[in-house]
Amino acid sequence: MKMTRLTIFLAVIFPLTVFTGQAALAQDTTGFSRQEIEYAKSNPDYFTIDPASIRLTLLETTEAPDMSYVKLHEANRPLDGILVTIDNIINIAEKIWKIVEANKPVVNIESKYATAYPEGITAAAQLNSWSKPKVFSYAFYAENVYGSVMINVKYKAAFAYNGNYKGKGKYLTAVAVIPTVVEVGWGYKFYMSAAVPDSTVTNVGTQADPVAAMQLKLNWKIATVLKESDGTSVYYVQGDGFYDEIASPWKVKEVKVEELNSAAPLLTPEKVF
Image: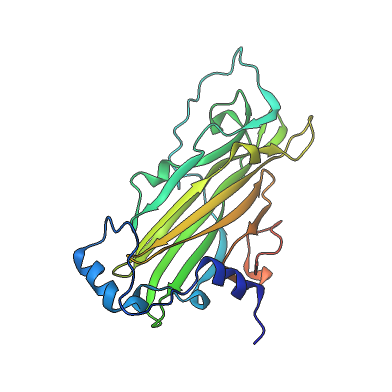
C-alpha cells in the first residue's frame, strides 16, 4: 500500500507501540494516578493515539472588534526625548509562554501575547491606525486505537496589525493564542505552549517604510502513562495582515478561500504535510 508523506511523518512522531505481555510503563509516571498506571498495564491500546485520527482543522477566519481579547500590560509613557528607530523591530512582550498546562488553560492567559514594535515604542497606543485584529479559529482532534476521542481542543490565533509611527511602517501587537475548548480523555494529559524567537522578528519592508514580521511557534505535547508525543506548528504573521501556516505535522482540513471572509491577503489556507 502506498504511504503518503503525512502517514510516514506521523508514523515517525506517533509510532504505535508493540506490546508483548504486560505493557512497559514510561520511566516517569509523576502526575498519573495508581488506577491509570495499573489500567495501562492491562489495556495499553487505550493509551495509544491512532496517528491516522489526528486532525488540525481551520474552522474559520474572522475579525475581532478590538484588542480586548488580550489585556495589554504596557507602559504608555510620553515619547518626548525618546529615540524611535522604525526599522529596528523588537518584541517587548512574551517570548515563551504556556497556553494549556495539564489539560487546563493557564491562569491569566489573556495577558500573554507578543509584539513587533519599532525600537523605542513601549505601548500599542503610541502607534496609530491599527486595523481590526484577525482571528483564526482551529480545532485539534485525536483518537486512541479504539476510536475514542481523547483530545478535543479548540483555540484561536489572533493578531492586530497595520500600526504605524508617524505614518511610517506596519507593525504588530496582541499576537496571541487563546484556548476556547480543552477536553481531554481520562488517562491523558495535554500541554500547549507558544514561542516567538527573537531571530524571527524581522523587517520585511524597507528601511524607510518597515513591515514587521514574526514566526509564532505553537507546541503540543500529549502524555500518557506509556509515552509522550510532541508536535509543532509555525504561523507566519506580517504587519500588513498577511498570515500563513508554514509548518505543521498535522493534516489540515481544506477550507474554501471564499469562506475566509477576513483573510485577505491570506494565501494557501490549507496545508498538508
